[in-house]
Figure 1 (tube, rainbow, N blue to C red):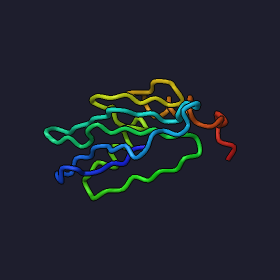
Figure 2: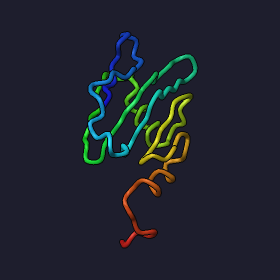
Figure 3: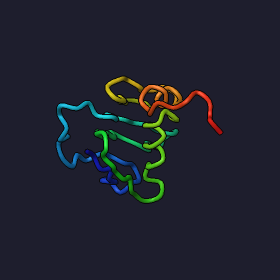
Length: 115
């Protein structure tokens, strides 16, 4: 598991490993590593990584402008990372649009809303 921290005090996030992944036999639901994304001259996310096992719950906290939304948008496919990889249940989803991740890794949902 990783924690996003602003080590440099400049608003860019880097990841700090908190502990080794404890579910070694299980493929993580989300396994992201080395994610980087910049906007113009600003590096919003640098080296972010996350291993999330089924049933785990994590939070993402930090000051305004620290890159929390960018990190979330990278993981969900709204933004494409400049570098790094995103694997969902062992499948590479780096740069895939959000609808691909929802169909492949999400729960079995009906094609059409029952409402």
